[in-house]
Image (tube, rainbow, N blue to C red; front, side, top):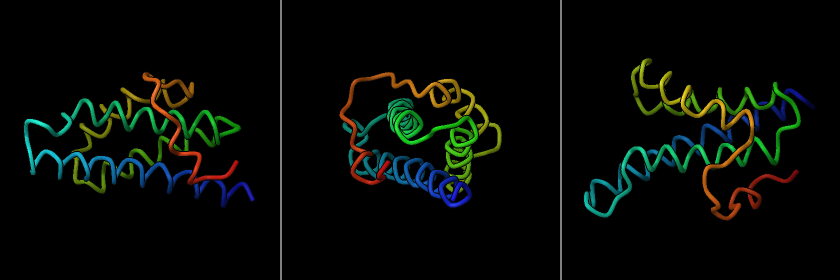
Length: 114
């Protein structure tokens, strides 16, 4: 069961990353003044991934699956290897600790049962 749980965690992290960055991009195209900046989008994605890590990961191996999903999502967006590594390095500590930077509501709990 661990293998499938790890796959589910990786896929969930991938979806959070990919969809979050795509949504940010679309919002910036529609209204550059009102859409979130890249830094805000990365911050929000970091919050969601930290919540995933805190609430659904029981081991360091599962938390590393969250990082794997983050990297895969960023690569799927066509970011360079350097940009992917920089963003992952920026969020790694928060994800591994499961610490959010803000106090947004936990919207992820509706998608993944414990």
